[in-house]
Length: 493
Ligand code: NAP
Ligand code: MG
Image (cartoon, rainbow, N blue to C red; front, side, top):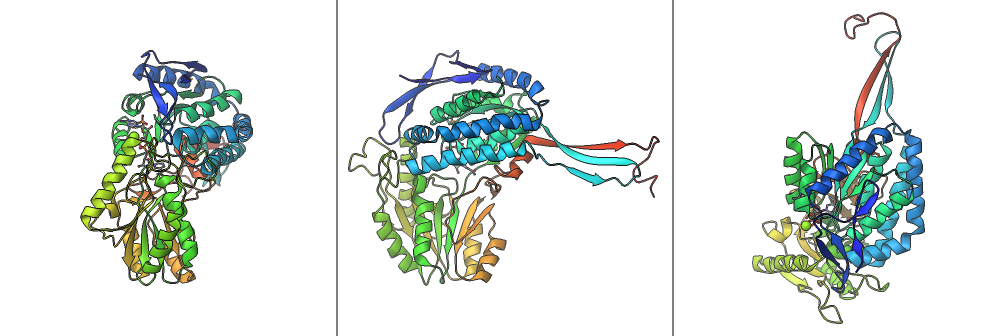
């Protein structure tokens, strides 16, 4: 059986606990590998290695640091298909999306390599004569990364690449479900020549390894993507030690369909956002806020297209919807469907695990559509993280925006309309970190900031130049070349 190990200080090792857990293929239930289960001691070893390696890495010129990132980009590109296959077999998303996700990591590597020659600060005029003023970005030290299984390489790339180009070292705990693609990404760093100790991979459970990272004094910041429950706990623990925390958490994203929308385009957008990655994208559409005058037609079109979606093993190119991540997730999704029915929502399609046609060994759920959903229902407010969509009828744009904004999350939203005035009003008033016009709720490009408002995050962003703010401190530097004491605000007034 293939073994997935830790990577600490440039060496692949198994945990001293001697414990391993199986890594499962969610489409087939087969065991793909087993992964080492670390303890707090291994976090400590990883942090020691990171602290030592960062001492010299911070002095390597950023353009030279970036050379490693360019190699990472080339290697990811060369191995794209192989990595996509590993990702799909362990996580379940269909192979086209697996390829797209690896592409996202490639794009991020090129983009952040470019930052090696930018990392812009400011030079500004001093208010005093013969004095120079500037601000520069400096690394923070050791970045602790805790990542989820739904975008196991893209999210890791959003975090590790800016951390490294800015001069930090990394200790990374990937999700328990996706250690294989994590190890492959680290092998790429190794092959690209990243010095030992700068990226350390510690596998194991969140409650042991993640917990130890949040509390470790040698980790200066935690960048986390995952559930609100865990994010809040990490924030409390790490925040008490004055560590910076960057948190990207849940969503309850909506597509608004106005009475003047191109309905077929809206249906394309909804299907892609709601059932792509089996509804397990953080940006997945789980609410459709439909103008009442187009609701019935939209329901009909959605239902007929949903019925044509092919479920199955994502490695099969013809499959459009893969499994959900595991049995526990399948049960959680099914319990939400039960709750929706009890609350009086009308189930139009789907609503149970899919087991026919050889799917019984995997964790499959039928694409599911509820309608006549009211805001006092739990399925309208809580993140389900599966292929379940709720249609909520509204009478106006104002009401649609109000419904969109009513949830505790604020990641992504979308509006289908052909009226430019309405589009701009929505762009201004939708309270989410990402807004789409005439497209579904997913499809982020890496050179823009990614993240959400309200309960989705704590003000930081992944990807884009904005991600550098997570991994750097600002240092303001004044050089007085007047040869005399000049007091700001005093000697010049
Ligand atoms: P999760 O259970 O919160 O897990 C995320 C990570 O945290 C995993 O690596 C997990 O380890 C670790 N963890 C668990 N308990 C921990 C603890 N006590 N201390 C420290 N770390 C701990 O989330 P998930 O179920 O994997 O992912 C689904 C969630 O992620 C959804 O809510 C989704 O919306 C969110 N998400 C958000 C974004 C975004 O950018 N906003 C993107 C993707 C996903 P184990 O795997 O070992 O449990
Ligand atoms: Mg979990």
